[in-house]
Image 1 (cartoon, rainbow, N blue to C red):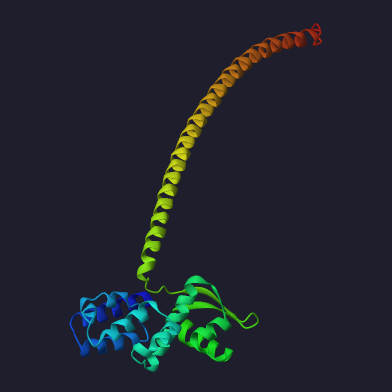
Image 2: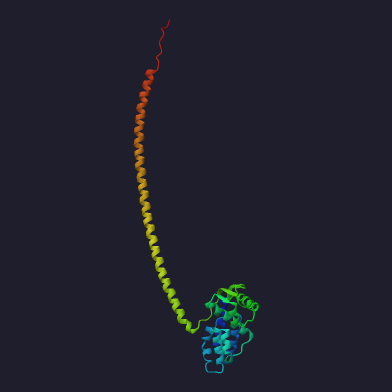
Length: 259
């Protein structure tokens, strides 16, 4: 099963769980979702009505925690840790993984110094182990570790949930892409029509050439037939004359009287 399919199944599971619970059981679902090793998208869970109903209750901080997993990073959590629930080790690991995805959204070459600062990692060995075992092996990123340049070259990174303020930019980007695609489609259709037209012209020209070739062949064949017949008549006449001359030049035998 690929990561996208697994994500879809997990999201569907937690959305159904969240929709059917309230209060403390709903908090347990949030903790489970944010701790799950294979779940990296949370906006659909966040949009469940029962999650909105946590607003104004003693469990509001768990809704805010879910928002942190949908859009935030490890450094942002640390800034707000005083008003958010304390994290268990699996939740910390998950938020650090999500932090790598956020960094990879804007820069395909991530320096070790930036990564160590954002992830609270103290040395290169620990950082590289985290990138290999907790990110690349899991399948959320692919890339190359460059120890000489002290950087991680990102080749692929799974996308995170869009922040609400990013939606307008995304809509604009998609609208521009759609407009460009429409223009490209029109251009392709025009080129196809031009190619069809040129092909038809070429076929007609080829047909005309073939017809002219046949006409020339027939004309040459007819002319060749006349010439051959004329030559045959001449050869026939010459042959008769030559036979006559040969007879005249042949010595005649003398007849000897019979004794």
